[in-house]
Image (cartoon, rainbow, N blue to C red; front, side, top):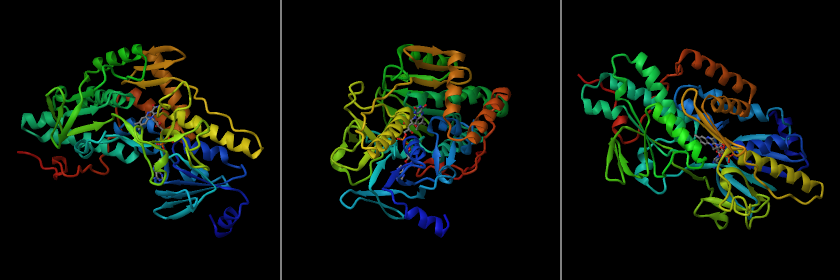
Amino acid sequence: MTTATRRAFEELPYPTVVVVGGGFAGLEVVQRLAGKPFKVILLDKQNHHCFQPLLYQVATASLSADSIAHPFRRTVGPMPNVAFRMAEVRRILPDRKCVETNVGDFDYDVLILAQGSTTNFFGNQQLAEVAMQLKSISQALDIRSDFLQEFERAMVLRDEHDLRRCLNFVIVGAGPTGVELAGALAEIRRTVLKREYREMNSELMRIVLIDSNDRVLKSFSETASANALKYLDLLGVEVRLGVRVLGGDEDHITLDDGSSLDTNTVIWAAGVKGALIPGLEDAVNERANRYRVDVHNGVAGFPGIHAIGDIALMEADPAWPKGHPQVATVAIQQGRHLVGNMLRRNKGLQPLPFGYVDKGSMAVIGRGHAVVDMGGRSYGGVVAWFLWMVVHVAKLVSFRNRIMVLVNWAWKYLSWKNTIRLIIRPYVRHGTSVSRPFVAQE
Ligand SMILES: Cc1cc2nc3c(=O)[nH]c(=O)nc-3n(C[C@H](O)[C@H](O)[C@H](O)COP(=O)(O)OP(=O)(O)OC[C@H]3O[C@@H](n4cnc5c(N)ncnc54)[C@H](O)[C@@H]3O)c2cc1C
């Protein structure tokens, strides 16, 4: 913004709407408020929107980071009534109608909280220190570097036990993220590892998927779960159900059935919790770590403050008494609905209650296999795989991202290769053996 443009923005005679977080929910709000009589300030600690459903493909070297991320400035550039500030919100001050951030305070008339969720280790500090997470681009790049580093290390190790530990990849949580990640790593074993790490016995690489539930993809239909298990089995993923990970350190994890697994790499995909910001404690549901909201996404007890997406817990929707699932479709629909209500209020109309339209669930498991629950039916195999691809490409934020993803997928499909296998920023695991300088053994 030039000084004149900034002044023009600041002098807009509209109420100031501060949106915290430009994920699926926040971005939907911003896009729908563009050109409307509101002065909108989008705050995000990152400078880009991240399409989280495809993060696992960045982590497994199928897609480059920039094909699933989109800079906020590209989005808001053409929107004269919207400004972006890269800022981490640290406290909400409802009495002063302002939020505190690392770059200063921002006053609001309307506050929309859409800061999403963080990884939930369910209080297990040991695991929080040891396990890798998959919630952001940088974490996906860490996983990519980690498995490539482990492969390179394995090429020079002589000790059989060290070698096996290096090639044991443990994923905790058999929800969509865990299942998709496991499938993608298994694909790498049967293609890249076999062909390009020729001196290594690729069969030594193990992918172990652990979940305390009795089936994979617990939130899907039983048919989809059974199909997913079948596909994982075909790919050689070891699925261990009904067991809980108790703890771990730099070279092993322990399970509640008394067993343990030697591994350098544990990826935690077992759950998320709301990314609360201090200041609205009275509205927090402790069990879910989310803000309690009414049917209009108003935060309970805080007029003028709304919460949408993963961070919001709406228990008033009779179809979802424990709150809506923390998925992108809920976030997008709540963002859209909230703006609809803001515009209704402007016209003197009553707001309408939110009702979630469940469009189904899908997960992909390696090349050519996916499961889709949609319209009361469950689909599997290649049909589901195509459906999965179409839906994900269509939902990407920009045309460039769609083209990049399509080209990468086409190349991978034809070449059978995960090409983006670059260790750009070596992964250094704090306080563990992996952080030791890489030393080849004689
Ligand atoms: C690996 C993975 C795979 C997934 N796959 C699917 C899928 O296939 N289908 C599906 O429907 N859902 C999927 N989800 C869930 C889906 O991504 C989330 O439900 C969705 O992103 C929630 O949207 P949101 O806008 O509430 O939060 P987010 O999209 O998480 O956005 C939150 C934003 O807030 C910002 N932020 C956080 N804290 C602060 C702060 N203090 N100050 C400023 N900014 C802040 C973040 O940088 C981020 O940009 C997946 C999630 C993950 C992690």
